[in-house]
Image (cartoon, rainbow, N blue to C red; front, side, top):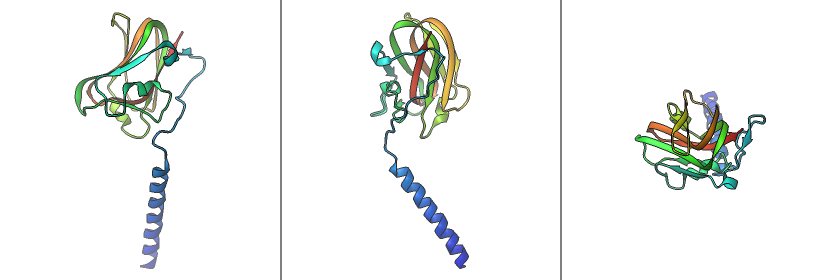
Length: 171
């Protein structure tokens, strides 16, 4: 009986320490987004005046959070299981895009992006290329290799969009 009580006490202590450790993390950890060298020049969204929008905003989790270079902040659409969801960045001018890197939310719900499409569009909003998020990952790197891209859009038929960062690389 005392052996069983000792085991239960150890398990309770471990669980308590895990909870303390989880609660000790700051709400937003300023982590740099994943970056690769040799895949093009990363666009500085603030320098070019890029703007982000999404179909709806969860309070405080705005579209521009996915442009802030902080993996601890996220953009998040409002209505669960809504249809026709989208998030996009307007690059303000057309660029020759080499690659788009998407950082998934780190703390939960990474599966929500599966089935969505990354779309690149022209200034006239003509679809130039679409790639599907076909598996749950933390980091997606999509080779684009398309000229004259103005909009980078993530489209989801049904669910919730919640991401940490979207990075555009140009040729």
